[in-house]
Amino acid sequence: MYAQQTRTGPARRQTGKSPALTPQEAAELAVDGYVYAYPLVLMDVTRRLMTNFEKPSASPGGGAGAPMNQFVHMQEVPDAKFTDVVRPNADTLYSVLWFDVSKEPLVIHVPDSGGRFYLLEMLDMWTDVFASPGKRTTGTAPHSFAIVGPSWNGELPGDVEMIRAPTNFGWIIGRTQANGKADYKNVHEFQAGLTATPLSGLGKALVPPKGKVDPSISKTAPVEQVAAMDGETFFARFVQLLGDNPPHANDYPILERLARAGIAAGEPFDIAKASPALRGALGKAPALGQAKIKEYQKRADVVVNGWAMVGTPVGTYGTDYLKRAMIALMGLGANTLEDAFYPTALTDSEGRPFDSGGKYVVHFEKDQIPPARAFWSLTMYNDEQFFADNPINRYAIGDRDALKYNADGSLDLYISRASPGADKESNWLPAPASGAFSMNLRLYWPMPNVLDRTWAPPPVKRIE
Image 1: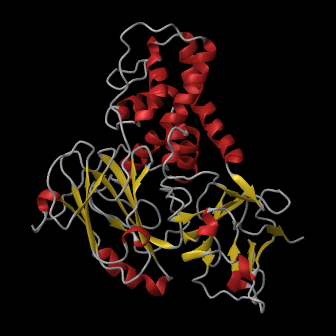
Image 2: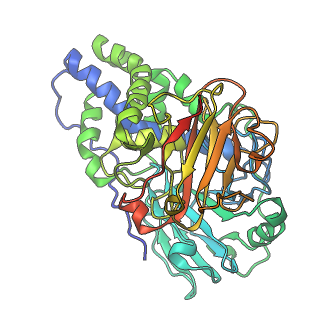
């Protein structure tokens, strides 16, 4: 029932000697190559960090992870210390698994959620979503499916659905609706029934193997690790990964360009053998590539009322490598818009960046209340794209909170670092103590008028 990505093998080796790259060609290729490779490298750094555990660890303050092919179930919403993934959500409890199906399929069993919203988003190593089992697509009854590798051929039990992964490695990001701390017990019961078993272990009493911890793996946030890589380190890492993670079939133009620079799967990457122009271009690629990705973010989205909304679908990107890299940088693990829609507020109604010293209000008319089949929330992020410390430990606010609506059915949400007053605290989303900030409005299982853009959030106004 899931559409499968078509992949190709590693880039073909050049059979003849290609003309030397001009300085301009070298400069363009280095930056284009960085943008193309960025999501794959970031995914691998994230995978290594989040699987460097002997056993599952569900620390919400950072360091959460589990060995390969094992779920780690978050027991509570992350706090401001969590820096594993940028722009986390405060609405659901995560159940995360990094899979390796190079040897055999991995069977995932989902228990009955009792009508509760959940989503098991599956990404390949290029950050493409290749399946998203959950309430929207598969319902809430018990369900079993097997993730199989791109070249696996075999038989599965009759009650197990096959989902073919485009790469042998990948990421499952499970999200289960949590209606506050009082609801955690119910979510934990659902998570306990969410299991991952190698195909050969079905029907057997298996003890999950202990993972091997590598003390050399940095605990620094993955986006920071990748940003700190020099050109030689970055492209050498990419070449290594390219051999294990088949690219898209329609990636051959960029792969052939990269091969001219000695960047190809199956060939050792040696920057010392590059021409001076290419060597210099590859050295500058990380800084220029990061700048290009961040600049694209400013102009890629459709901006309505100060809210930036993706102009085209996310989750699958085709050859839109710049958008793919931007999404990876801004929020690795982005799901398809049909599952959740995340408009981002970067400026107020006058086009000014948000400042934690300011006071703001967003007013929803009765017919503007976010239209979501599941639920909605507004989440605050500091200038590093993580949750911000605040006196009431509130990182998001939404329709599952005890909001006070106006007499006409409209709704006002207040954004400031200090309390707006006791009578308004129920509708208060705290801003960081200092610096800039941004916000995401999250609509889970959005209505059609969200997807066709006939609905848009109202502007966020600064209160002078």
